[in-house]
Length: 177
Image (cartoon, rainbow, N blue to C red):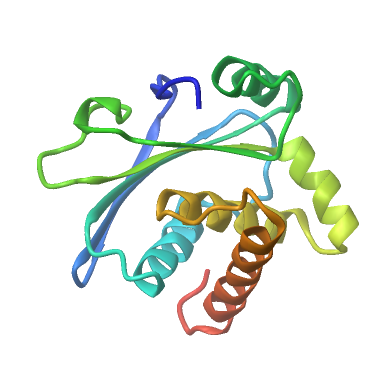
């Protein structure tokens, strides 16, 4: 990564505490997403993922759902790659990197940027809904922030398998929205 992404576009914040885990979530929606993909849905999913992965800190996650063109610009700016991608993840290096600064007790998180156009293409290829693909990518970005890597085939397969398992477990749980 060429630098830390300072997130100037976070707009809608949600906050929740489940047991030892607290999650603050912001959404910036710049491309059409399914009506079912609400802040509450993402909050439920991501709290589930963070708990399942043993994350005990307080978390701040800022999501941007955007176009191929926007993510291409970010991909070039921060990764020096002039192409669109499905997702970019930018971990916060410290309190000043979060959209509005991290409150003193919140220690972990990052920005997750998802191309809705790319997600729609991938959803069609996978033969599932755009809603499911956006959930899948949201888990992917969160796993990156938790330290998962997908730089080689073996680690990518492990990460994708974990994403599938987490999405399936969340959908089977009594709380998904």
